[in-house]
Length: 287
Picture (cartoon, rainbow, N blue to C red):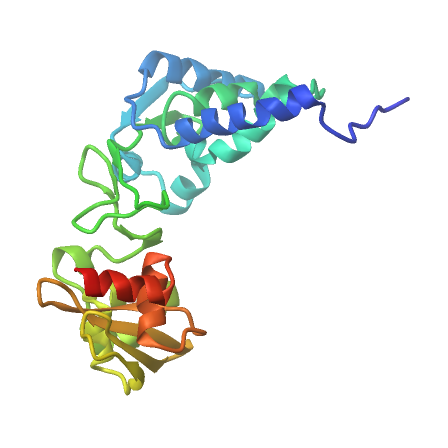
């Protein structure tokens, strides 16, 4: 048997890559309400594609938490619930990859995945079990920072209609208590075991407050408090980092991380504006 290997993409195929990327990125981040009939039909086809008979019972959940509640009330064990969960539209990256190779490159043997691709267009997570299938709604809100990371300074970054969701700080999932009860103390934040969450906690509290807990060494201090003071500190389990501590126009003191190679407060401040120090000094004099 002769097998023709695809060694490169044609220009036409390459031109379609961003089309698939944008389509599935939009589907993965969709907050549209599901069409229950289309979702049920696609889920039924998934069962048939796997050689299984679709269950008679299809249920609809407002969120992953709601789906877990529904299944637990039916007596389904937690480990079975976990094993039955398909992330569906949250697998958009993989589904888009498969659809591209299936549709644009004509790869054989991929037909069984077609129903999953269709289902990924219709709803959120899905629980596939023998006796029941639970189709979950998508979130009603997904909030981002300017780098398109899940983020909210005031509440849930990913929010479902029943109040379930995830609190995220610049892409890092953090405990809900940090928002509902307040962030940890500076001392506790600096000892937080998860390093990504530790940095998130420090940013929530404010580096100006965190620096007061550390033995900061002044590297350079400008005569102008609005240019600020360059500090070097040792952060536990992280190592040396540099910060610029400045006074803003409202009289509030704040601090922010700066690169380790800047040597003056002026250079650090200029770095935050992506300009050189001389230009910043002229702007300071002018205003």
